Length: 233
Image (cartoon, rainbow, N blue to C red; front, side, top):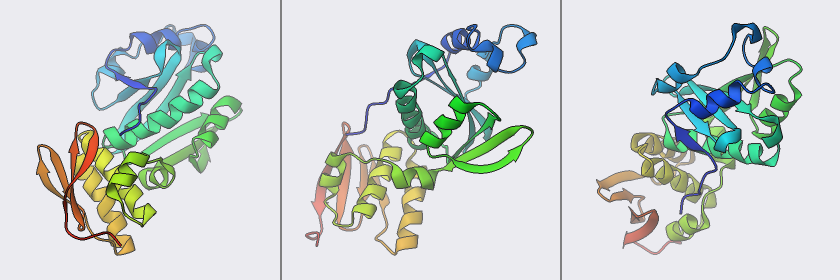
């Protein structure tokens, strides 16, 4: 039910180090006169998240403060294009649904056209210019407004209000990947703003959600209605 992603989290720096120190990449990362780069310590810090899209590169998401991550994209030139765009989309979903992330930020040096194009494709919002770089942000609520929810989830929820159904689907996806409290808070904000029925957690094994009209269980990556209190209008 939940989408397969083209990025995976890695806990070792071997592959990202190879990309960083490739002659086509190294001159554009940090200070070129400092010699080879080694992200081993950064990646070993479990607060940071390294997402790789194969051997060609990936995204290093550095923890700045609770829920806030600065993303750095590093890819070999030959891999740039559609694959990187899809990887960027998938990396956002990973961070927002599978970690505590509520906002990603990044900075792009002036004149870096490829990075500028990527942040625009990723629909990141411009913040300000400082020190020869443009700063961008994408908060969870902005990502959620454009994120796709599986048709299977929407059909199972069977709620005429598609916006509410999508919010429920994303909240459940967060919970499915261990971000239970985050998912509940995310949906609670939507419910309060729209005066919609709340969602609560009824059980944890399996996860069962009370959405007002029904109890919805998550079993083996699929949603199941286990109690319908009334027919949806």
